[in-house]
Length: 571
Image (cartoon, rainbow, N blue to C red; front, side, top):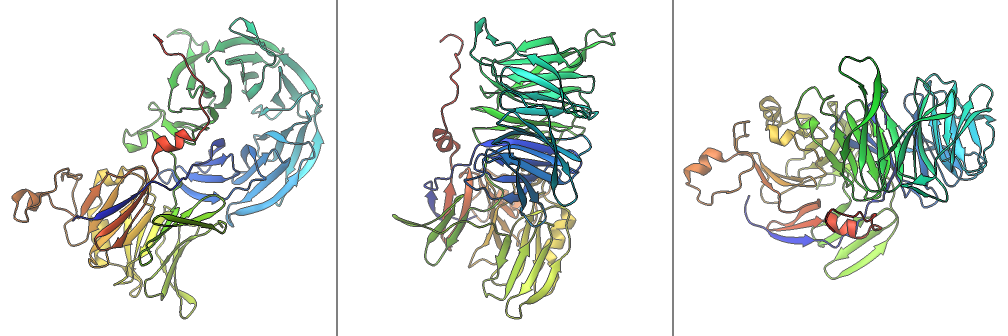
């Protein structure tokens, strides 16, 4: 790999916003995530959990609810009282509509996906019809005395449950009238609380309503009689979120203590047909409140104040025990936030609402951030490569202002790309960790790229769970490709052989003697360093100098509000 002088940068004061809502789409296997600054992110779980789309936030949009409807239509609602639909192709807001009920706290799409419910500050539950182009108000349900904090449809579409302060209402969808009002217990560990907030409800096919509340309880209700069936005290603080599996054989809840609990429907005895809900697994992957959870067919998903998106696979649901069965914790965006000017030795930092331009010892803040496509410009200024939401890559002739060629389609999204200065070869990294090299002048893949695809990458390279976010090149060594993700920096030397699965991929002791027998036996194209992490950016300033921008997680946690203090045994 050689020796470099490294500028180790840790003054990029980037703090991701807390996660407020997640919504899983079973049809497309995509996950929508909204943050407290109004940002909405779309993750493709089939493409190695890659963040393929991104909607910038705005200070006036505080998202409180997020849901999918009609297959691929995404809606959000928040404290400004508006319902927003997103255009997933153009990557902008399609329209915003005022619900005229004050701040919106909850939202749910009907099982058929043709209707939308919102719960408002004024106690109203409003029903909207989803039309091909927009949504249309249909009617109000019986108004309640306090804000509607949670909503859930019965899978048959005949009833809904609405969680409020101190009670749960069950509505008949056809008439809009209240069928039952179930009063929740304010008792918390023998002490009566002033009020009990029902943070989440889930309506099951058999008529059972599951609720989670600020008293730390998970409760089961019979919606036909309006009575409490069973109660579980699981936390010393609020239980803030709930999500149920499609098969209704398990559900997950998140607490303000940072714990996620998994409940499963299991037989009472080994030979019994009777089943009961049992708390089976607690998980502690968060340091702060778990504000939202989701349940996919193979994993439990959670997010909250600590900004981490955690995806924990259900081992009994995963067929092949490979890297897909590993815990995923996504903290940073899957896009580059930092740009570097080599000649001027400047760093440009991208924040949510401003840019910062840094030189050693000084800073200038300027401008605003706009949503941008993934672009790569050749060093001679003749070629521009652009990647859109469809994962296709188009190359344009800048001087003639016309399309030059299109890179053959690939099934996974592009995470990074760059044009080599000497050859005008376009190097493209995809979310499944594949790397291709495409000759722009010749309009086909290079011989090296064809060799790589025929040989295949090392299994440890493919098992990495963070995408490549930046690619660059050594000015004096045209056979070197420099790239990195959040946890490693790599130099690919195209002149060396590719490693096979029996080769020692991460070599901790690189030999210095060129005639060393060990070096001849173990040398391969990939030279990897894991010294710098989490690594948001790394690039060459000159042929012997690197700049590395890190963002330690401890620095982010230090700027978050303090978590709930839990008493530890023996203290």
